[in-house]
Length: 142
Length: 149
Image (cartoon, rainbow over all chains, first blue to last red; front, top):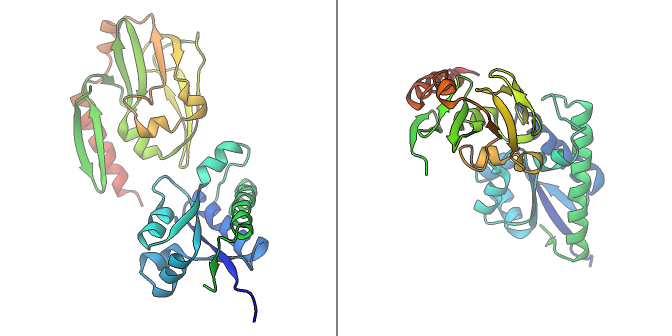
């Protein structure tokens, strides 16, 4: 019998057509596809908005890290509204304020600054993910 | 405490404080015991979006009306704002260096930009818009914004 998989879900902003939204999604992809593919799962905000049952059940079962592109904080609000627990909220703007040289521009394709900012943000997210997994605070078999 | 003129355009409500004067760019000026406090209107902060940085000219800078006073960077734009009146900067809001989101949170209060001294308020006020006049201009600008794709 294998040990249950501990997971953390990542919910990025869905601000399509906005550089800060693009950074949030780029960071989420880096975390879930490249940096911590086994320990994290991306849940698209749109599915939560639509009330997708599978997405809601994952959100209810697992701690979430939200990444929002603006102060409306749609990702954080939808996770809460879906019955989820947020382990950490990130805002792209806060990270950019700490890295003024990495100004994100572009929409369909982020500029170099935006890509680097996404990487910095992804590193901050995985630090939280690693802490949750180490503390055995992920969900089980979601 | 300020009273406001309010209008809702699309899903946004914009407030114009009635205890101060404005220029057409939405920069407000309020006389306070011989000094003039300057800031940005609610419409301006909502149109520009979340503040990332605000770079304000330092204390001691002499400004003529129309001269650059501050540059703000938001998630949408980089934009320079000019002083609406003549005067010398005697205070810069310390929040601008570390927490410029004060402009978004409280544009008519904690989000002020600078305080000027040395201006002839009666003469300066005559060049500015009263709240009702600015409200009309702002309403037109807000309606234009909603037409943009």
